Length: 243
Image (tube, rainbow, N blue to C red; front, side, top):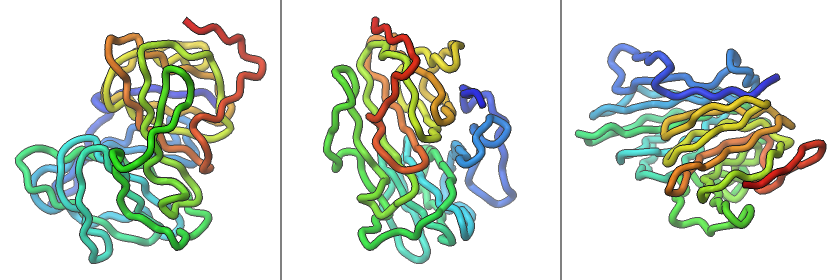
């Protein structure tokens, strides 16, 4: 199984009648992702149609742009940029967008193998989370993870300074979305240009590197299964050269 890189604008848009949402499925089985499905959803003004991950799946959302209200099984939750959202299996959600700007959400659907624990949080804001260091050039903050009651997957936002890290791999299955910045995805011996709106899938133990060759920081939203630590890496059998 190899990695996969695309951009949301390269994926055909789908709209359901009467819905405010334009949906692009950027990562799925056709991209080699057997357990994770990623969609970029752009909500126009108004109230969306209800949607649900289903009884045995959970949905992890990230607000990339815009603001509004999440209606989840009768409750209301504020949506602002850099907010992570945890929708558990069987729950139904809608988005109310006051307009006029779009509300852009990145959705990742994953299997739900364990029910949420007692510390369940529906929304988690980036600004409220502590900054953690992965290495000298990279930091990250958890959004949805075990501390939010989600026991199966981890969502985080990584901040990458201009650099190329050593090639490495992870033991988990990961999908990602470039929120800001530009660079090169080195995946499986191939290179792909990435900018804001680029999406990628990294299978378990697949050698890769995300290089920031721009002048500013790169911000990456990632979701992986099973839950764990995004700073955990393997360099086994990989020649590591840092530039």
